[in-house]
Structures are given as structure tokens and as C-alpha cells.
Image 1 (spheres, helix red, strand yellow):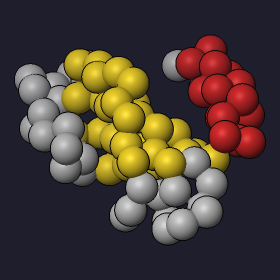
Image 2 (tube, rainbow, N blue to C red; image 1 turned 135 degrees about the vertical axis):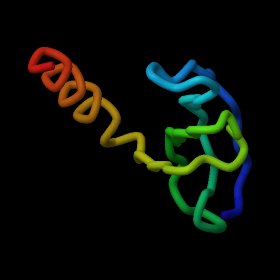
Image 3 (cartoon, rainbow, N blue to C red; image 1 turned 180 degrees about the vertical axis):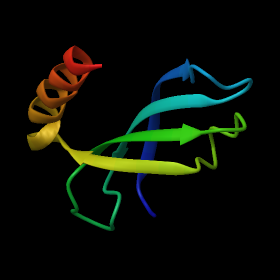
Length: 76
């Protein structure tokens, strides 16, 4: 992955001893002129720089993902 990563927040992962949820933005994540993304990483052992899982969400999809997460929260 190329581009510049900017950390936004780091959240303790509920149900784990050291787990973290990290939120950041990445400019040009897939090379020159690729669109910026929000990146969400899940680290079970607290290694925020090397997450076990991560997802990149393009800016155009963020609102829809937030709405879907809010609906998921209602059903939990």
C-alpha cells in the first residue's frame, strides 16, 4: 500500500485484553491518483500498525456504511 496514512482514533476492542480498533484516512492508497479512503483496522493483540483485519471505505460510501452500522446496532 502506498499513500499517506493519518490516524484519526484508536478505540479499545471490547471483549479483548489488548485489542484495538483503529480509524485512519489514507490518501492515494492504491497508487498515484487513487481515491482516498477511510481505513478501519481490528487488532486482537493491540498491534495497531499491523491489524488482523482491515477494511478500506471510499468517501462516497461512508454515509451508507454508517447508516448500515446504525441499523446493525439496533438489532444487537
